Amino acid sequence: MSEDIIPAGKKTDTATFGTGCFWCTEAVFQELKGVIKATSGYTGGTVANPSYEEVCTGTTGHAEALQIIYDPTVITYDELLEVFWEAHDPTSLNRQGNDIGTQYRSAIFYHNDEQKQKAEHYKAELNKSGAYDKPIVTEITAYTKFYPAEDYHQNYYRTHGSQPYCYLVIRPKVEKFEKVFAKKLKKNN
Image (tube, rainbow, N blue to C red):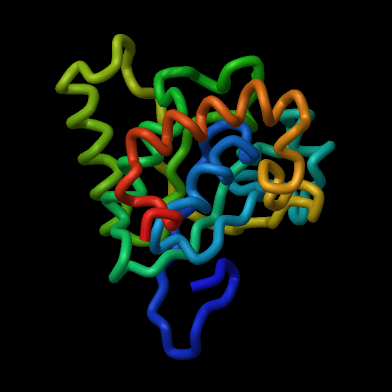
């Protein structure tokens, strides 16, 4: 199935995650079997239709986020959560790598009670297991509104893969992800 094309009558579901820079995690999630569309954008803030420049000030309350439309018969919310925890550092408060500010926070914006319960359970189990050296700081918040980022942010890694940021920061994350989740990749159908 081609990305962005949802057949009529096809049941889909939505997940919304904040994992720091949306360029990095968009490149990961859009490679998963069952993910129909991954859109970079902003959520969790107080300003309607914020621009990238406004979000970067840290004053709008938004997180850079991904809204993921997926086929729940191919990939489950639990599997998306597994990728979420692996795709970024959930123990880093308001920071991912060199990106610093509340807009880069780790967050799960749940769409229903089931997503909330699964996210809280997964977070508690990871903390209890000692999977990370530090406590997980991921916020788990009710989804309200998602604003797609400007067009130049969409499919960023696919269209700008040779730029230094993509090559030095995003590519290693994608390569690690492809090794860990090889059986879940679209290209391995």
